[in-house]
Amino acid sequence: RIIPSGQTTMDTLFQPYRLNDTLTLANRFMMAPLTRCMAGPGLVPTEQMAAYYGRRADIGLIISEATIIRPDGQGYPNTPGLYSAEQIEGWKKVTGAVHARGGKIFAQLWHVGRLSHPFFHNAEVLAPSAVAHEGTVPRMRDLVYQVPRALTESEIAQLVEDYAQAAANAIEAGFDGVEIHGANGYLIDQFLHHSSNLRTDSYGGSPEKMSRFALEVVDAIAARIGGDRTGLRLSPGAYVHLAGDARDRAVFDHLLAELNQRTLAYVHLGIFDDSLTFDYLDGRASDYLRARYDGHLVGVGNYSAETALDAIKAERFDLIAIGRPLIANPDYLAKVKKGEALTPYADTMLAELV
Ligand code: FNR
Ligand code: 8K6
Image (cartoon, rainbow, N blue to C red; front, side, top):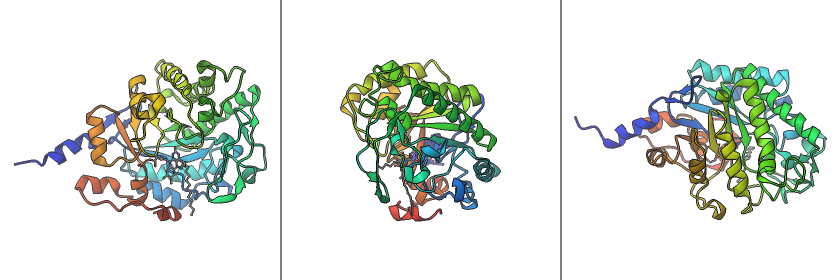
């Protein structure tokens, strides 16, 4: 019998993948975190969200939509939270639906920093430095981003504690772990880039100091729930919400060397298209991470199952996160397995949780 070569090689993606002693995934696919702005009153996850995630439970590891750790971390309407008892109860429906179908799910922990707006919480907008992001909140064009107030060191300590508490809440809500959102120009990333971090105290001014907040969050969460249940998303190449600077490279060089001294579940690139190249990274952000990070690396950004397989065979990364195709195809995995055509993604699909 002749086995079509495409099918046998595709098997690589469908084999179980061991992350660590705690977690073995059913396959190498992850669902990329996808903000859907569909949480209910009190930013509580809904039954519809539980059904939406449950339909995708065949994916090796689902990363939830970004979920705010406290009210002033919000930057978009109806994004879910993980700081109230009601939110924890709501998430139990989601994790229950995924686990009932044999799946695994991490919560992505989020604080948007300077990309917040008092419209959402009536509080101050806080960030590493008093530097505004120029522009307006997407889909809420009347809301102009403000000049944030620079965090004090004691406020930073409180934030670290709030991340750790949200991680503990995630475990209480039944999540298998958390992914720290350190990417895409949000709070943690704002510390890691020179254009948004002008501090001269122990959180800015050198690669070590600029990395400090990210590492404190990693360490506090790992101490609370275990490094084996903790992932981290990073955008070493600035491509959205902040400007890149050639000096940022030294920050990520330092951060990744420090991460190699720790045990995490994985590092996940944050990007929309992995064909993007960055002068100061000498190419693609994924290749830069691969060269410096020793642990499991998750690739993402405009990949099909076929191009992901090629990249994994070339050892460019270990796992593949799929975003937009999974919005359009709840049955993505079954379709790929059978070689069926996928429904193309369109932005209009964001209006509904299919
Ligand atoms: C995203 N992305 C994203 N990233 C993240 O870290 N947290 C999030 O909540 C979101 N939300 C989000 C919403 C929507 C509607 C889109 C399209 C994207 C980025 C996402 O995880 C992924 O990196 C990109 O979509 C690229 O992967 P695909 O879509 O090309 O497979
Ligand atoms: C290049 C854009 C970078 C965006 C970063 C990720 C944030 C995602 C925000 C997506 C918003 C989706 C809103 C859906 C609302 C539907 C309302 C009908």
